[in-house]
Amino acid sequence: MNTGEQLTIEQAIANLAGDDLGLRLYSAWWLGRFRVREERAIQALVQALQDEDDRTPNGGYPLRRNAARALGKVGDGRVVPHLMECLYCEDFYVREAAAQALEMLKDPACVPSLLQLLAEPESVPHPAPELPYLAQPFDAIIEALGTLGAKEAVGLISSYLEHEVPRIRFAAARALYQLTTDRERYGEILIAGLRSPDLQLRRAVLADIGAIGYLGAAQPVADTLAENSLKLLALKGILEQNLPPDYLTADTIGVMNLMDSLL
Amino acid sequence: MTDIDELIRALDRADSADSLTEAVKALAQTRSVKAIPHLMQVLSFNNPGAAVAAVDGLIQIGVEAVPYLLSQLDRHNYTARAWAIRALAGIGDPRGLVTLLGASTADFSVSVRRASARGLGLLKWYWFPPQLREIAQLEVLEALLFVLEQDEEWVVRYSAVTGLEAFLPHYPPATARVQACWQHLLLHDPVPAVRARIAYAQQNLLTPPAIQPEPLTATIDWEEILARLSARKRQERLRPSDPANYRQLAKTIVCQDL
Image 1 (tube, each protein chain N blue to C red):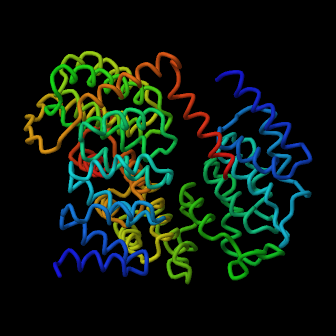
Image 2: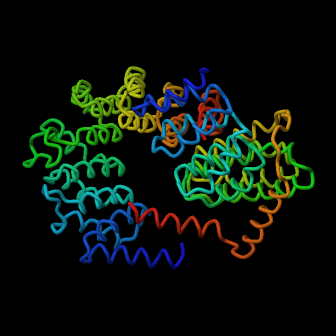
């Protein structure tokens, strides 16, 4: 936009190769935040997926996590093979960030790898260092399969509807909403989640509903006990996935009236 | 002991986020002036659920809450200040005008800009003395168009559309300019929800709502509002791109805090 921003892009790329670990981490985040699509930035981020310098006490790779997230946001499909390699990283959160980034890049080439992680969760040699009771970031994997339209995953994902972690059950409902014709059934599971006593969970379900755009959830979303900003985002998702070319129907007007009441 | 004292005691006794929110809602429903200082206090707790309920309650109470809200703006608790601005936006009292002009164009919090842009459309214009009204309306028009064209957050632009829709029936001379802006953005705003809201505003304005003035119940120092408006104008002339610059600066600081 202006020379000030150019300078900062230069700086961020330089920082990624510098000695200051904190600055590297921040720069990776920054390049994603501003969706910097410059070749050198993308190369620097891909390089950062292999970083060995920045380790948490438990063996995690913070820079790799941020780089994977940034590459998802930057949106260049050529990095898909690099992100697929990250699905086998020993750090749980790198695998999670990679699955989320692959979902954003919408390239079905990664579906077989995601399916394999779901079918054989213990196949990665080192389980999560910081979440020992989960072998895989199941919610991120399931959400990616749903967005990527992987109908072959329906059977496997259905088995997660009963998972002990609520977040994962809702991810399964969200994906099955996208992958099957039984939309009302799975939409209603998510609506029930909006009434969970756990605020974090209600926030997560709001994001799920925004992602799938289930019209039947508009009023329950508006009634949810959560921040207006998150409810508005969910309603925006519903509105935009039900918009005809000339915008106005009784349904879309109803959603906008709800949004207006939350401004 | 009256019911309201009991409700205030329940608020003081609340020991969880949920019970606090419930207590605030119950107190807010009384719409009593006596509830104002207690609802104000909730704005400085770090509890969004309770704060939303308190803001709703203060909006219901309306003009009588305005002096309390304005005094909150002078304090240093940023969160409480942001909630107070949101309450002012919902009330539409002319004493909130200059605060909302500044907040909608320059606050670094998205939710404050969002609420302020809507609030500028909700001002009770029929209370303004004629000589001040047009000066203020021109300021509001400029602010809302600036926000709609420049804000990088979709929800703030969406909110500005609702603000303009509510504003136009009070100031018909702006119709051509606003419609031209909307026509342009119907083709060019990147966010479908914003474009949809523009289409909805255009449809609504085919049959504009009748304006039903409420009686003026507050004592308003119009001289002071005019003085603050002029001070704002002077400042703008000194630093023409001030709002955007300020926000950029604020955003940089926030990012570095992460």
